[in-house]
Image 1 (cartoon, one colour):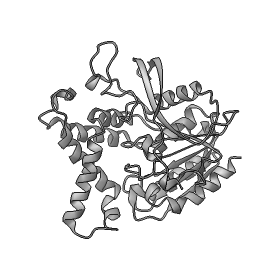
Image 2 (cartoon, one colour; image 1 turned 45 degrees about the vertical axis):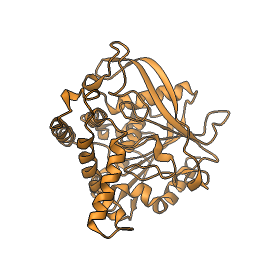
Image 3 (cartoon, rainbow, N blue to C red; image 1 turned 90 degrees about the horizontal axis):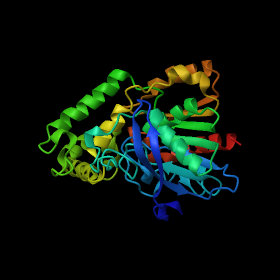
Image 4 (cartoon, rainbow, N blue to C red; image 1 turned 90 degrees about the vertical axis):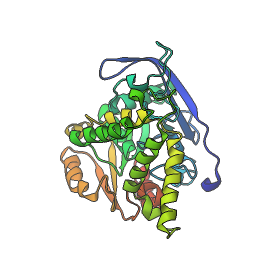
Length: 348
């Protein structure tokens, strides 16, 4: 049924005077979001689905074109996050490009796009705007937060910032910290590529033709890191056809994602590290890694799981045996969905 379901409606929530961790204030913030299912009268059946770095709320749509693959086999009627029972909310991150306030948005104080003047944000800032959205919906406590990659960062940040706000989190193909040197290196590499674009103009490229070729190049490299070639070899054998298919997918994404958003979200990870706050976590935790993921390899589990357990966290680990690398959570959803369903059932 879900494979034929239409795309969910994009909704939005707007709030004013949002103070960020660095002390600056965004005069207006809009958070776009999609929902699946029906909110219970007591508003106690909500599952927050947090998306990855370069995707958005379309992750829960059938065939959603995201680096993680579509999660419509995870979220939907009769699925592991069963929307016959749960009300799933997937918000677009603050700073991202699919409907929420970001660098391409107009600053109401100047009437100009923020561009490179968009303030530095943190993962805590991102989850704080999600908390504000839920408050607006009258949702005090979540059943769970479930998300892959950057969505896993958000789930873990939620668990330490708002420990009483959820019964469980499922952090998928992710980690509880990004080493600062890795985060700084990611920002530097992105900036080096973008700054070479003749239209870059210091990040004010909106009226200069955009930087789409640079974004296609960045996306192509990202998709290869995620394991796209393995996926394409399921149906293609000619190397030239595979490269053409990668470029086509990269081009589609580059047409809808803002370059400054890439920098904003990469920069938000500079200080991401919740490992010292594990003792604050009260929620049950499900941690899932993919056997072939180059970004978050299985070698993380022997570090993360003992640390969670030493902090008194009720944590479970599952290794997803997949050839699809970082894209495994969507591409091989059937291999870990039963474990997620068991986890969801255990939350009562």
